[in-house]
Amino acid sequence: MKTRPSVTTTTVHSPSTTQATPTTHTTPWITPMRTHSAAVILPGVKSSVLEDKVDLILSQLPDLTQLLQERQDFVEGLSSLEMKVDSLLYALTSHTPVRQQTEWRRNDTQQMLEKLKQLVGLHQPSGGVNQDQELRQENHQLREEKEQAEEQLHRARLENTKLSHRLALVVSGSGNNSSLMVDEAGVEDSSASQYGLQMEEVMQENQELLEINRKTRDEKRRLEERLAVMEDVNQMTEDNRSRLETANREKERRISDAEEEKRQIEVKNRIMAEELGRCERNVTELVKRPAAMRDCAELYCYGVRKDGVYTIAPFRSRHLVTVWCDMTSEGGGWTVFVRRLRVGRHEVFNRDWIDYRRGFGRPWQEHWLGLEAVHHLTTTPHHLRMSATDLHGEHRAALWLSFSVASERSEYELSVGGYDRSESSLGDTMVAHHNLNGRKFSTRDVDNDDLESGNCVRDFSLGGGWWYRRCSYLSPTGPHAGYGRHMMSLWTPGNLTWVSLNQLAMMVRPASFPTC
Image (cartoon, rainbow, N blue to C red; front, side, top):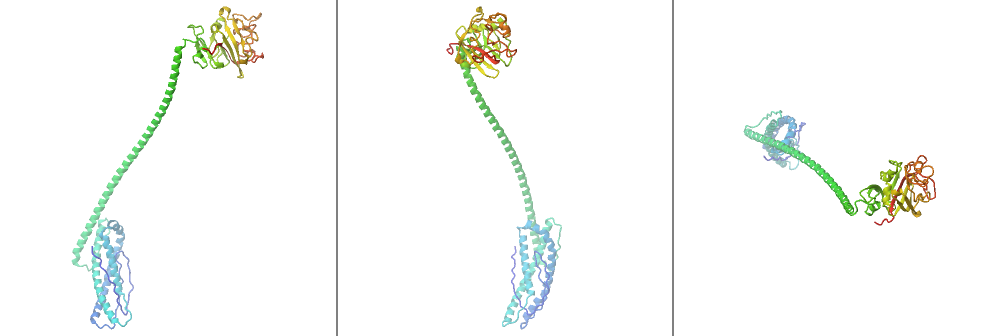
C-alpha cells in the first residue's frame, strides 16, 4: 500500500486578479477544481529570473485547467457506474485494500484540487515596508508548491487510471454487463507494466473474493443442512418426549387403577376375613349344637339374632318344619304359629281338620304352623304373645303367661291364662270375653264351638279353624276386611269395637327363657 502524499497550503498575494465563474461536479472520488484566468502584476521586482518563473507558472495554468476539465468528464462517466457498484463494493470489499486505497486517493485528489484553486484565485494585498522580502519568500514557496502540485497531479492521473481498470474488472467479475471505456491522455508508456501488475493484483483479489464468497456459500449451505438435520432431530426428540409423556401418563393411570384395585381387594379381603371369622364361629356353634333346634328360643341361645325363616325340629326327630322366628320383639326367641299379612299373596284358611293338624302356607308370608307341632312345642310351660298392626299403622300387643295345646286325642284342647296387663296394649281376647281356656279346636268338618244353632267356623270365620266358645272376639284365621267381617275386637282393653288389621302374629316362647 502506497503512502498518501501531503499537500502544503501556500498563499500568493497579487495586486490584481481576474476570476472566472467555476463549474462544480460532485463525485465520490474527485472534486473538480475551478478554472481561473488571471494576470499577475509584480511591481517593484527587480529580478528577471523570478518574473520568468512566475510567467512559466501562469503559462501552465491553462494546461492544468484543460487537464482538470478532461478529468471532470472522466469523473462524470464514472459517476453513473459508482451508484451501481457501490453496494457491491461494500459487500465484497468492505475489508479489502481496494476500498481503502480508493478512499485515500479520493481525499488526496480533493486536497490537491483545493490547493490548485487557491493558487489560481489568490489576491495580493496592498504594499508595505517589507513587501519585496515577502514576495521573494512567497515566490520560493510558490515554486515548491508548483513542483509538488505537478508531482501530485502525475500521481493522481496514474492512480485514477489504475482505479478505472480495477473498477472495470470488479464490475465484469461480478456479472455486471456495464462497461466503461477509459481513455486517459498523457499516460506514460513506462507505467504500462505497473498497470498490468495492478490489474493482476485486482484480478487475484477478485478471485480470492470469489473463492471466499463460494466457500461462504458452501459453508452456509452446510450450516443450513446441519440446521435442517438438527431440526429433524429436535422434532424427533419432541415426538419421542410427547410419546414418553403419554406413556408415563398411561402408566400413572394404570398405577392409580392398580392401587385403587389393590385398595378394593384389601377391603374385600378384610370383609372376607371378617366373614370367615363369623363362618368359623358359626361352624363351631353348629358343631356344638344339635342337628336341629327344637324351637326359635334354642336358635336364639345359639346366637341367632335376625328375624326370618328357620328350620326347627319340634318333634325331636328327623321330621323338620320351617317356621318364622321373631328374634327382636320383647327379647326375641319367639316361634310364630300363625301369621297373617294384608299385603302380598293371601293364603286360603278355609281348610279341613287334616290341613290344620299338619300346617300350611309360607312362613315368610301367611302361615299356619300346624296343631301337632304346636302341641309338641308347648309340652312345657310357655308364654303366648299376640302382635297386631291396624290399617293406620298403629301397633299393639298382648301377653299371656300360660299357654299350651294338648294332643290330638283331646282334639287339641287349649290351655291359656295369665293375661299380663302391664305388658299388654291389646284387650284380653283369649279369656276375658268368650273364655277360650279348655276349648277344643274346630274346623269346617269338626264342630266344637258349643253353639246350639249355627256354626262359628262356617258363619263367623268363613271356614277358618280356631278355638271357639259360642264363637269369639278373635278370628285370626278369618278373612281380611270385607263382607262386614274383621279379625278382632278389643283393640284396646274394654273396647269391643271390631277393627281390620294389616298384620297379625301369634307366637310362643318357653316360660324359662332366656335360660338356655
